Image (cartoon, rainbow, N blue to C red; front, side, top):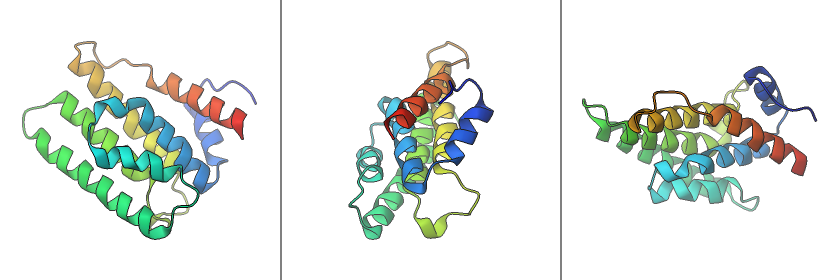
Length: 153
């Protein structure tokens, strides 16, 4: 496997993953920014996304809980921009993506890519809140996470 250096290579590699692998990689992206969201429902997603023995009912229940967390964190941000609150929202949104039930997916959906984009937004919010601007290294970290995952399969 070659070293991933661009989003094109990253997305192409993600497109080769099965749905289960997409859930697993997406949950790794969420775990990388999990410190930005303290919601227990979001933390449960990582466990369920990586559980091969889970049933559809459990997937749906965790999906609904994560979606609720995403909506709640979005509405808590209000009119004044709370960058860490926004970061929490994006982490919750990314977590719900990871456990989207199969019947709600389009053939072109890639859960890992969608989770990656949400977690990048979370990291951008974190860096803005810290006064560091909007530059962050989340994309590079995701490339490394994916490379390590692919080495293990």
